Amino acid sequence: MYTYEYVKNETGRVVDILVDGNSVKRSYMRGFRKAQDKGYFHLHDTDCLATNPISGVTVCLNGLEATIYSFCYKWYMRYDMGREDNRQLYDDMKMFLLSINSNAYYDLID
Image (cartoon, rainbow, N blue to C red; front, side):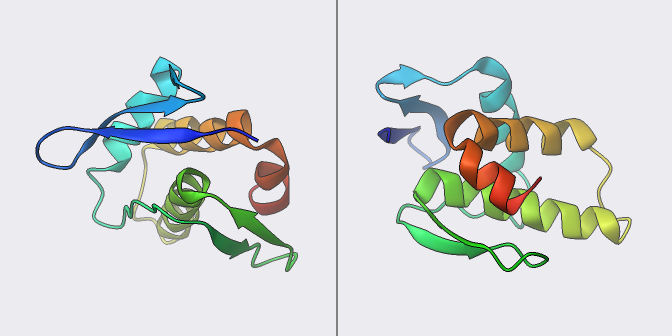
């Protein structure tokens, strides 16, 4: 298990994420910053349950994992309808989840 902390600026925007006290990889933060610009982005601060809509597997996620997963899920639904095209953003965010919780990634996304 790991600890995480959102580092926010004066407007409340996340400008860095610390995992076990260290800044996350640059590409993950690039994606996270871009994701915050999407109207469907939601920053989670608490644990929650997420369910894979295809397999039915349910996973307990912390706030950071829930933020990333919910973004990826919403992005993909929009992509499926032809409303998203920035595949790099999706890839950055899903790889972020893979790096911090591979089990959740495989249960929910892959």
